[in-house]
Length: 255
Image 1 (tube, one colour):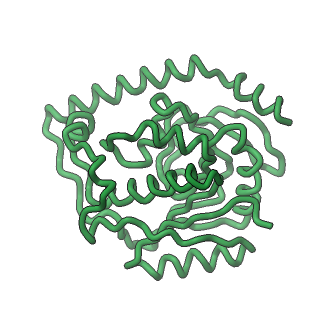
Image 2 (cartoon, one colour; image 1 turned 30 degrees about the vertical axis):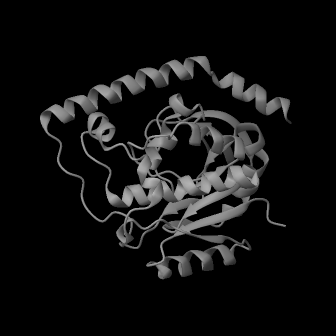
């Protein structure tokens, strides 16, 4: 039996992506449920009422693009589903490319989710080298990022982790991957299982982002920079209060 339920977010107007991803999932001996993504090109969605454009302009200097709103809404609805059903899951986007040992990564996530609540299975960028939390065997390791690696192509989420993410997104003012990375606000550490067995593979087609972000004025650029520096101070404070040894102790106590 498959260890974790897998949801794959897919827009109705992108059946080719679902066909490709579902074929990859089948080849690995897994099954997934297609989750119809919120398509901002089809008009406003009720969840968009959470979007605070003034806060986005104040903190980022630019508004969220329609595609970013749709992406946030799609993940938000799945988080609500995980809480409502009390069932952990893996969430994929349809531009995910699955590597041969993806099933092993899912099995490891199933073991670790009751302890940590949230685990990245993919990243758009590595940034600084993450800190090692534990060797998981067979070449896999559990790591913690001090700066979020970005992307929402694949992650595993438990009900408790979903509750933390939901509590901190009453207002939307940033892309959903930035929200995932903001551990100092929602309290969900930026943990990941490496090496990543999921890559970003959109085959040159970008369905979600329908327009470019507007250019920032000098004043907006300065405000964005100030907010980013403040966030980094909050992040360092959170890391100091949640040392790696605490996570290692939690892992060992569950062994």
